Length: 307
Length: 315
Figure (cartoon, rainbow over the protein chains, first blue to last red):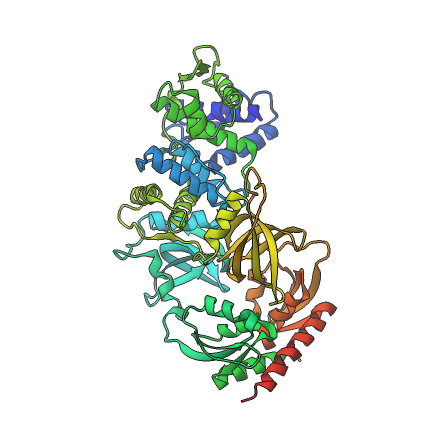
C-alpha cells in the first residue's frame, strides 16, 4: 500500500513542480515507481493512478507541450485547488466534524474528506448514540450539486423521457433527495424531480449557463409539489383502540369525534389524495373508512380487484 | 462506493501537508487530533512515507523533510504540495448537508449553525438557500430513548408492531437512534425477542424506566441499514406490475425478471408474507401475483378480513 501512495505523491510532486506539460513517456522514465514496466503494465497503472487522484478531486489535464501541438503532456490545472475559505473557528470545525460523524452514509467518507481538506477538526464526544442516513451514496448527487453550484445544465431521463434542466436548488427531505429547476424551451414552470427516479444523469455545457431567480430557496421546492397545494378534504376513519393513537400522531390535524362500542375511536382525518388509502391498508383490518362514500367505495373496489 | 484504505491514507496525507506547511511546527497532539490519527506510530508511518517522496533524482536535496522532533512535527521541502486542494462537489455536499441536517435537530448548537452559515456563504455567496437538508421531525420519545442509550437505562416500551399492528410490551436495552428513509428508528436489545431489534420510534406508544441499568457498548454500534436485505428464510413472490405499479421496482430492492412493456415482472423478497399481501392490496388492479403461495394465502386472508369489516360497518 505504501508504494502506491508514494508513487502517487511523487507523480503529483513532479507534475506540480514542472512548469511545462509532462508527457506520459517522461513520467514513465522519471517518476519513481513507474520504471521497468511493460508498455501495457505502465498504461494500466497510470490510468489507475489518474483515477485515484480524480476521486480525491485532482484531475490531470492534457496540454500540448509546444505550439505545434505535436506532443501532449499532463498538467495539474489551477481548478484543482481550493478557492473558497470559509474561515471556520476550531469550535465550528468540531461541531461540523460531529455532524459529519453522525451522518453515516454507508462507508462514503465524502463529508469527512471535505473537512480534512479544510484543515481537519478535533472530534470530541463521538459516542452520542444518534445517527442519520442522508442517502449520500449516489454518484449523481455530486453532479447535481455541481450543476446547482456552477449553474450548469443537467441532462437526464425521468419517467422514461429525456430532459434538460436549469437546476436551481436541491433538497433532502423525508428520506429523499429532490432537485428543482426549469426545463428550457418549456413553459417556464419550476419542476421537481426525485433523485431515485432519475436515470442517465450528466452535467452538460458551460458554467453560468442561466440566471437563478433571486432569493430562490430550496425549501420552496416541495411547496410546489401537488399534494401540498390543494385544500384538504375530510374523511372519517374508525380505528381500533390499538392503533388510534398512532393515526392521531401521524396526522396532527386529526381529531377524535366519537367512540365505538369496542373501545375504538372515530377520527376525522384531513386528506389530499388517494394516498390516504395506502396508509389505511397498512393498518390491515384494524381500521375502516366510514366517509366520504367515494373514498370508501374506492377502497372496496381496490380490495376486490385482485380477487 | 467505499474508499479503499489506500485512498483514505492518501486523502489524509494530501490534506495534512498543505496545512502543516501553512502552520509550521505544529504539535504532534494537534496533528493527531485534527487529522484523526489514533496513534503516534500511525502518524510516524505517514511522515516516514513522505520522507521517501519528492522530486526526480530522489536524492537528499530532492526528497521532502518530514519527521517528529519530540513534541513537534517538522515538514519542509514540499512547496509543490502547499496549495490546499478543492473540495469535490460530492465532498462539499456531504459536509454541507450533514451540517444542515444536524443543525435542524436537537443535537445542533450555535457553533454548528455558524459553521453551516460560513460554509454556505463561501460556496453560494449569491444564493445561500439553494441547498437544504432536514431529518424527519423528532418524535416525542426520541430524546428519552437517546438518553437511555447513553446512560444504559433499561426501558419498558409499549410497541405497535409494524408487521402485525398488534401491541406488545417489552423490556429493551436501547443502543442508538437513527434517522433513515424519512423515519426515526431505535436499535435495541429486545429482552422479549432475546435479540437485537429495530423499532420505528413513531410506533412506540409509551416509554417507562424499568429501574434496571445495563452496560452500554463502549462505541455505539455502526448505523443499521434499514433497507431490507433478504435472509436465508426470506419469502419470495413473483409479481407483474402494470404502469401504475412500476414504482415498486424503484422503491424496493427487487429483481427485475422481464419487461413486456405492458407489465414489469419482478421477484420480490420479504421477511413476512404480510408485507407482500399489503402491497398487493394497495396496488389493486395495477399488479397481479404470478407465483408465491404464502403471499397468495396471506393476501386472501387479509382481503376477506378487511372486507368483512367494511360489510359490518355498512352505511
